Image (cartoon, one colour):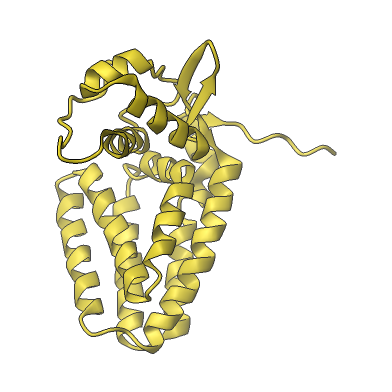
Length: 235
């Protein structure tokens, strides 16, 4: 808990959604590492609220698989569940393959320019090694496509289910060449949409989303305490 940065809540908004948002982001950014104990009283004091919004936020995070609640014992930030990460990746890939296909066939005016602006922002953030902001720009790149396709509600659903794979990506991000690969893939997706190349857009997206899961063994070897080992298949 001592690693959690101090934050100010907006007193004009309900506290519980803000506590949820701040805790989720701290977990996804690995500011709160897997195994960190989350004490309700300490969190309430940290955010300057009662324990009720903290309890509600932890319940939601438990439903998302980001915390493990042990009644009468402790609440911990969960380890990364590889099976859950693979399922979230499958869902996101399935949705986004259809989205880029649709957008390449009929892109709304200004979409490609907005995507290219996000790519330029990501490039600047990568050069400055500002990985937290880079991740936010990456999310915004994809979110723009959901909005353009008229399925922004699906973005919220995918985001709620992607906590484990998002943490894997965060661990993978500082790897040499990773940010460059992301930028290269984003440029290929935007270019294919601009050119009306639906197959090219899908191929670029498929390659883009496969990067982190293809490096799972490497990530597990580097961060064994962060990842829940997958059960071994029986012979």
